[in-house]
Image (tube, rainbow, N blue to C red; front, side, top):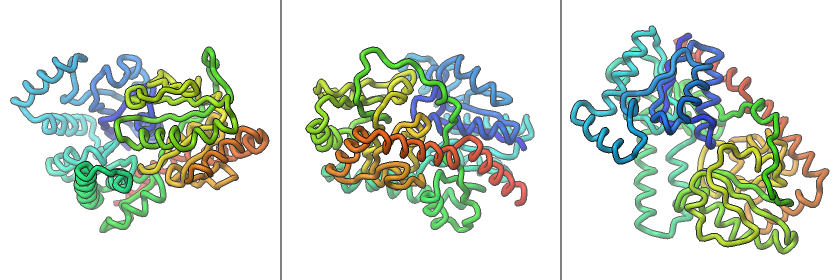
Length: 405
């Protein structure tokens, strides 16, 4: 089986959940196929030559789409380059032509779109240019749900209207691509049910879960200098009014004071791209906002509790899988744990109110035996359901489905 995999999101080392999904998808697909990869993100952003060398270990060939090939790392020069190119041929058309060229040269009949839910225009164009190709729209979440779930938390009427319009537009796209594409993948049973309910042919919706490579978490790095304990850990991608920004502020404003009242020495580490900028107004000696790090492991591996205080989003949380891989106990909202078959007080603690969340944290820190037990159970759960091996099995089912059509 030959597969051409293309994605607008790719990076090594993986900076967060989106990049982890792509990296682990490539690892799994390389096991079951002759894999060719086209990145639609420019060289500096993916990690430079080190990233190219890493992905060349898995792909027969790794190349860049014309829209990003030879673009300058200087954003002003890059903007001029893009304007100049637009007079020659649209970036979308150039990328489509390149994908079709690589597919033809290598006798490939399956194109797998990593983050297909943000690549629909490209998918449509390629389907139009070559209807005989098998096209797989690989989704990381239900994007419309990701957008529309924010509405109850947005008080600004103008922004709420924008969110509603964007969510409804994405719903329309989702309804179109589940019928247009040969396969639409879902990261969990929750997402599978959503896509199946809007698809004419439900058999075209298949699982391709979010997973982690447990081997990459087996060796713990050194503890950071002046690392403080007991501590709490929160990681994610931050931006103004983002799900992570609102989650962090809910925790800082309403939950953290309750925890500090019982455990005055508690320290809170916040990690992730955009966190320093978005949370720059936070001034608390018990809180360290670290921004984007080369690796989260020096902090995650020594956390007492990993937090997932999300109130809206979609998909499955790499935050939970990574914490489980490091045997760190987790406190999450119900939505934060969506799509992962965790059980309250067995493999995780679920808390949706301020008091429940703070009490859960305190219980984990004060009861070490209980803490170790739920961390161990969560590790076993992820090992069974969200490993590279389980993803390979899902990929094989998708390939078998295509071969039988």
